[in-house]
Image 1 (spheres, rainbow, N blue to C red):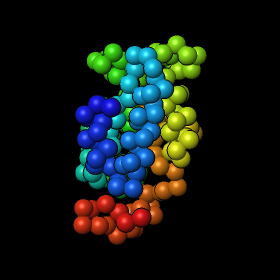
Image 2: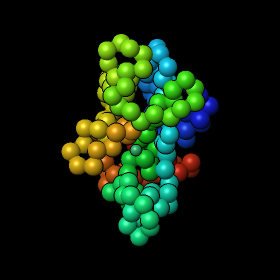
Image 3: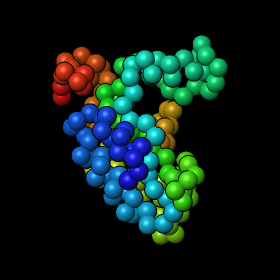
Image 4: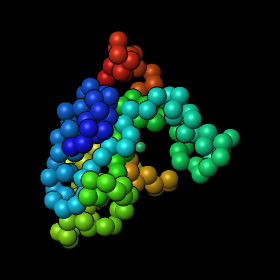
Length: 157
Ligand SMILES: [Zn+2]
């Protein structure tokens, strides 16, 4: 696992850090070929979320989210976005490519591993498919928003 990914895991909600470490290690072990998984985004502050929401609305660019600050599971450290790093250097969001030639697209190998650990994939969403996105099953932002925070500002689950 690369350093960037380790650092992003260390900022996720404490309840999922160990699990995500396991998931990423399993993904990397199963992608025996040229691709390895990097977490491109984990915890996102409300401010960062609002800035994303403005993109394609009151700011230039393409719309990338329908969630305002507090409305994304990322805002609680319970979601990650992934990207594949090919040969240790090139980022790829190709969900169809089978880099290790085992008959299953590498991206889907990861989807299955996340699912086995109880994580939902944004690629299954009916509207606004979010292919890089995974989130811990069983949480919704409205409930999370109303929860108390601990001294490190993580919601108390
Ligand atoms: Zn995401």
